[in-house]
Length: 79
Image (tube, rainbow, N blue to C red):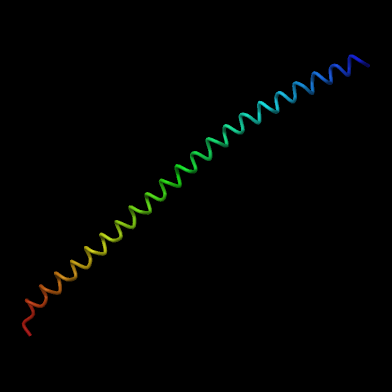
């Protein structure tokens, strides 16, 4: 019986080492994932800012084109 008990202790010690090693690997993976998610959030915020700037530029161009068309139409109108 003592030999079986010693074998079980060795197995338990080995299992504890493997679990702690696995936890360390998982913790590193989670840290990497959190870092990647934070980078994606900043990228998404930057893209939203750029998109809003683009929308504003398009609105200004449409307004100016309408203004030019109105002015040209006013002077070409023979009524």
